[in-house]
Image (cartoon, rainbow, N blue to C red; front, top):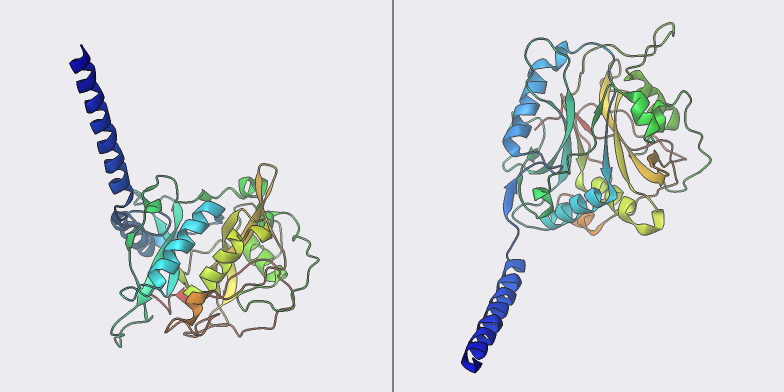
Length: 333
């Protein structure tokens, strides 16, 4: 009996040691490489969605309102990956391209549009036929991209729901702002502009003369933001001192490129918890440059010139969010 007990004890100790060894070595394994967008869409699915949108968006007429919200935890994970890969000499992430994408649908059905966030890195070499020196890439080594729920809470053609969930740019009146920023970031846009541009892409009827709601088809495929701006904004969102809980991305229509054409754009607005809502937060959110701004090729820090653009204005308040990226057509992958 004694020998049996000793044998069982030895087996338990050995099994415990093996389990501990297994756990330690499992934890030290590097993250499994994945091919995905920053917000979790598989590469091939993302490419198919982007291609489908590009082939059909010029025929998608009618009012439309699109929004997506990303939590503070999502933003932190994206920020960590961008900084890691930005500092990796084999990658040197230089920005993020925000794409419109849609699943393939039969017939002329209205597009069910999603927002895809794709990392970019410098093209080498930059060929004469390239409209942008920033090339998309999907190869990442990150644990968080294996999560099943990071594609954002995307909402199509339901501005009333977005408003209930805190999207104040769909309110009947422009959000009131009582702040002044001494050192505003060049990507900030004026409150009146942000509100009016989001209202133009709104699924609600209006009785204006001429009508406020824009029924035309999409005229933008993507918008690119430089790595310094994105990491600075994401850092501000995850900073506990700012008491924010995420970022809302709006479809808007307004920034003129060229001057006679109102273009579809993305407006990024930080949010703050208000009851059950993630309410747009219009604070004086001055962005602090991150260390990645000083890497080779990122020295511009705030915006990268290129292609037709509006003039950079001098802003005196955090009006209603962030834009002023590079638009495609004109600046494409």
